[in-house]
Image (cartoon, rainbow over all chains, first blue to last red):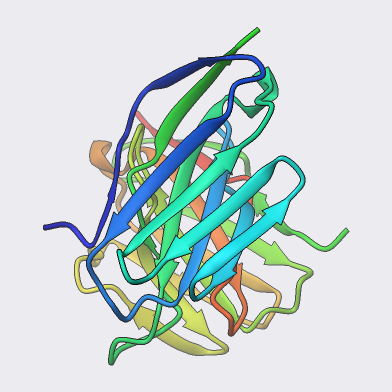
Length: 114
Length: 111
């Protein structure tokens, strides 16, 4: 079992739809959870950062972490064509070695159609 | 604006010809990382520095080396690039709270 599982998609939605992106993980040491957006041929851009469980909202984006289920989600409300990108989940936590390393999901390719 | 800068953005080299990629940051973060990303794959960590303390991933080929002369700069040296080394190379900086901020990447082509 991979440490982080993320459905690669592709996911195609109409403009204005609510998008739900998800990752599951197996390492209970993970405490820091991030979502990155990566446009084609660009570097990943940090969208959301969450420590431990709970929700965090930033504009149209909401990140949820459920540590008991080892499940994280990113919701995008009122999706726009400019949201079309690959979304990567990433997480880290102290597990006896370096706690400065991220473990990434494979990324979900999202297309928002006008 | 504080940021992570990578140069060059595109690099073409010949098989076996050494190449150096550079990264600089104005964020004053202690941690700097080098990742390799191939098409439709997640970034793969090559190594990272905490200050001057170098940490190599176990599966990073010996062909890849790195230097960090000061807090602001970090270099990735590929001694003898092979066709399989063609990829996007991403530099990132990190805080002690594990957030990482990526540069725009250098796309390496090996002919």
